[in-house]
Image 1 (spheres, rainbow over the protein chains, first blue to last red):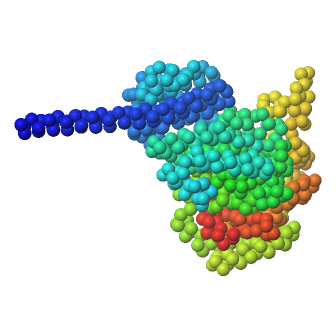
Image 2 (image 1 turned 180 degrees about the horizontal axis):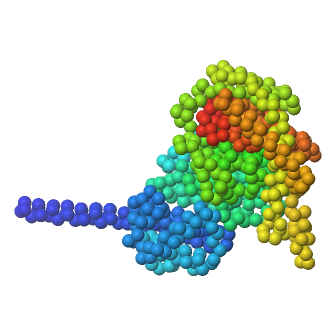
Length: 148
Length: 479
């Protein structure tokens, strides 16, 4: 009889622990989704800069900053953004593209380069989008970020 | 809690980082103030939508516990001769009324990279030619202490913005006193750093051998913080010099360095053309320095009486050269004449430039023209070299040189506009620092008849850190 009661207690306790763990996992995932939504909203905001040619440079710089913030959020190590990109390189399907985007952002800020080629801008946007998808911030579906 | 409750930018940033005050609430407060103070005509443009967007990003970063810059969430304003992305840079001139720059000034980039938020661009004399903002092609800014008076210039909008509590700091440019003069007229701290200490890449050029960029703030500590962020060598500006290895933030060490400073009072500034009340107030402050234990002596720089004349030869010469790029063909105001390019350029320049720009182009091209070059420009450069030598010699014996910033109190709008020579005389005490390339600061020195007055301190070239440390030591004494 006492053995049965003990068994019931163990089963109930086990169930409670499983419930608690699943609740914790659920809340962590929910929190992560909320935080990802912050990054997605920023991306939506910066994509609107593509409408005006005079804002293309700013778009690239903002996208690069966003990449830095996402890598920071995901705890990739490194003092500078370049170091963080190195730490995260295995995550990216196309590492070279990300590097060329980051170099372009630096060129705009440090050398006064002016981005004026529309195709180059579209390539940059695609590369950053792919990077954010690789990092799990964006869903594979483009609609998730409301892009046209 | 409001941002104005914090005495320094550092305290404000600390509270933002710990989540005590949200950046969105700060930006709301800024735009509320901007709306309330529209009468003063301080800003040429403001960026409400962009500022709120940035504020939300920084608030999100605080929430995500991400690392933040040293100016996280701090709103700021720049004079409208700093190029900024996606917003117009007019330099308060019709010539650039619709100009949107394809790149951004290095100093603005540095501030934004530290998470500061650009909220607007301030009025100035067109192309920074002037001492009152009356030469702006759009409107005259009013002095925050008396709406009938000028705020000084050319960075009048920047100084008025800080005085009206729109923002804790603003950037200005100083070619012959354009930061120190409005700082004095608006009761703020204005620093002209050593020539080349702050990159001028992305700033509309006035006179390239004299132009400097500097901060206007409420106190010396904030000024030092902003200088620490913007001062550095820049490959986009070949005139930049190395920054102090220890930075510019004021600490107990740097203050200890200036405890026994030897000060020279430039007596030449106190002889002619100075308002007697300004002189008496200045001499009272000098006495306070003596009482505080500083070694103070009167000095004379015989050549200083030529500084203004030298300035108004070299400066227009460089202006005429720098303004030659505005031909109406590549960018800026364009008046078309399909038959003749030369006529188009002539029409664009004569209609695009204001009166003061034209006056300076004429003086500049005159002093540079063959036959007059040796008599004016070359002679002025020779006197400039001698002036540099005189200051070098003085700094062997003295740590700092002091004088009033401006010989008068803020004057009434329109009072001096009809007489350019009288307007030029306002710069008499500030131009020397630009000609010599040394750092100089204007500190609030109390009120006379309800109007602010300034106390100028100069130091040897590249002694910006010592200048700021000394200024922070005496700023309370002077108020």
